[in-house]
Image (spheres, one colour):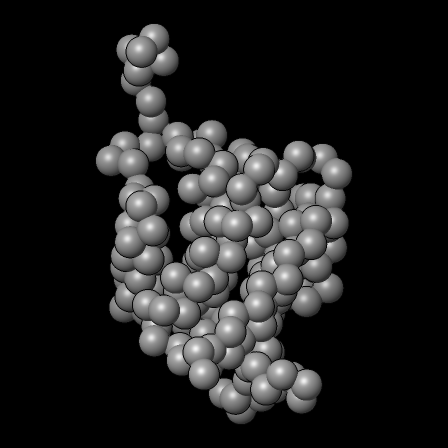
Length: 172
């Protein structure tokens, strides 16, 4: 039996219209990370789109940081083991919360599409749900960044060579 990946996506914000195709892109990102990591079991992931105020509230409540951020990951593991949905047998990997307002700002700042930014945030969070971390810096951070870029490149979302657009490119 082939594993099933269930990605439940909800939009809990009204400040930014979610572009067509974003939900499919988020599902593709979740699947791509699991395939890259050779995760061979059925899995469930929840992805929630919020605004800056919503993510700030969660950041304050769960991390004691009173500011907004781009994405939060809430892995559902106990002693390194994922919770299991008793009805389906799927591993419940956890929740991803993305501030769409921040994603819009960062996509402009980095000179790439909103789709590329949301894909990056999803891949980044999926790696967190699977146990990767970058808070200590060093090799862990480098390894996580490499995996993010490899997954995104495999999906056809390679990072721009530069993070700004030349004025001439706007006239093409």
